[in-house]
Length: 309
Image (cartoon, rainbow, N blue to C red):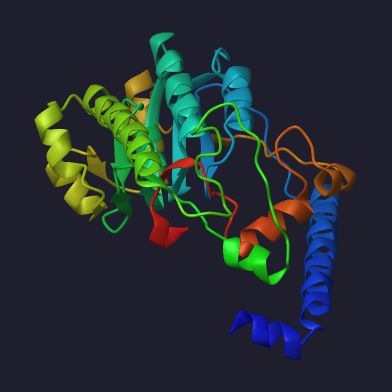
């Protein structure tokens, strides 16, 4: 079917590439406008509660950790609120943020999680590192588990008359290859790895929330919960929005009166870095192509609620 469409409409490739170019231009112009005229962040003052955001699919931890390192030793920042609005993401970055929060708490800084519209899977993993979790009643959370996607696009290579060859050092070196089906032995290896990472997730929740492993296992079958359900089953502490989370953080830190909320400054990237790629991301055009093809997270172990991606 796809081959027929491509034969009858050879211009479809040109239209797709032109569309990607337009998206690139619009994104670059928008980034430039925001950099020049974007909202300026206030300076930190005494008795401040720092609010740090984790938004969208989690693919990188570096900016979050960099900001955390910058402010965690600031004496004016009495506590930190991690505002989560994310369906989760890649395992490694989620674990790195979790570990950074745990270390920050060990050094004496109070950290509270605030759940927005969605705080599931990897985002919940991060929340479990915090001292308290405050959630909206209708927040979508939970989705405790691990998933890994693979794509077999061998038919597309055949249509394009492209033959691929592999020279490898061992039978499993090309495991997850995108141009052939996965063998039963390879599926068993991947499943074993998934099960191991799943155990890591459950242990993190058990430790962070002070729940028995049996309790966590019963809750961690991948299902989602509302914020209200999460409070009832022990995955969260109380109901409320960002203001309530900031107030809770201020209370833990011993702030008298209403805490002053300080939003962590957003980092801005140069347009050329966005086009060519930089320290934080791959090149923008390449990322857009993979996103449109649905291959941006293929082959990576994920703490991700797939339906909210």
